[in-house]
Length: 542
Image (tube, rainbow, N blue to C red; front, side):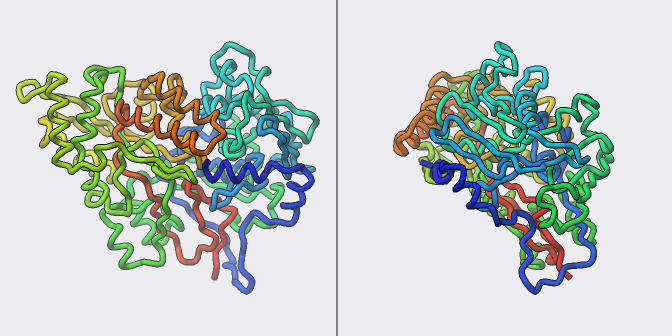
């Protein structure tokens, strides 16, 4: 049983105890006594790529979620340790992990002063699952086991049949189709943040523009200059505004990590999105107190289009996986504390610990020998080499990894690899349309439980752009979600991990780490294992 299951189980108390346990807790910046704050509380955050959208129900990437986390808030939120904390809801209760009742804070408003009600929550969750929305996270409601979510997302039932309703203006009741002890982990995710029904009905798709958007979080949208900056200012109507310190935050979309580093060193960025691999050792030596490294639940991998020959043949996919020297990529090409990966999910999440596949313990020479035999069996040889294109989004480190991988496949398998780079939003479109051979991607867990990685490979999942389908894999993941015995949970997740490792719809390369440069005047920086941090938790000292 994972930590999230145990923690949520402890929250399953009568509402009065839940409410009282949080009544005097502040959730914003925690400034130590005696600390002198800077007179100007404004920061600049590097944000990688330009977000394709700021629509809560249509976002799918961390560059969008980073901004959305400052603009909006869920019924609950997670702290840096992964602990569930109240958000827009001050309390909640469940007696069976199947029916959950959330009580909104009194007098909640949107940033324009209009009431934020339970009906907004119901509208938002229905909008997420409505096929007309075409949300990449529609399947999230299915895996949260919200009643009728499968039928709604599949277009078989109307959205108003979804298991969420408003009991009154301040009370939301959610019914699941089975008990889910870690349901609050889903509720804390940005895709389930409420949006304003009136605002969206008034402006349609233009609701996300400055001047139109109303938000529920600590900040509101001030400017959005595409490919230049997104600026947020403090939302004075936020329920916990008294504990917010930063008055303005600007997000800069700089996908060139070297350019971002130079801007940080020149004082133009307060917190970077990343650190260039080639400069990581130098930064640790020159600015050790400014380099912050955090282990996160993430896996960098090459996703394979399993619907496109010759990658319909599992032997070809397995050969590419085995021939890649992941240790060299993690330790030498990147060299930023990452670990070679042989599974599509971290081996340890909470109290669930899995074993890697057999070949993880082989020498690289043994793996290469097996890879060559598999490719030969699949009909490839020196006279008939495997040829394909490896796609990656434009980024210096992604390019270095792609070059290294192509070289390894060429040297060991005789493969002819063409490298192709696209801008982030273009690559996402290409990926979802399955117009690729292999594509670079990173999945960061949405919550602290193995299903956040495995669900994305289930047949028909809205995030399953590899086209992978396995009834055995689907059954194992589903069984783990139904299990109540901790040992059975681990066994079923192990089975699922073993199946997908053998089928190889993706080639895991390394497990992730979050590396950022943080200005020494910043206080309160504490990212979670899911890779997020909130501007409202930060402050600047003199």
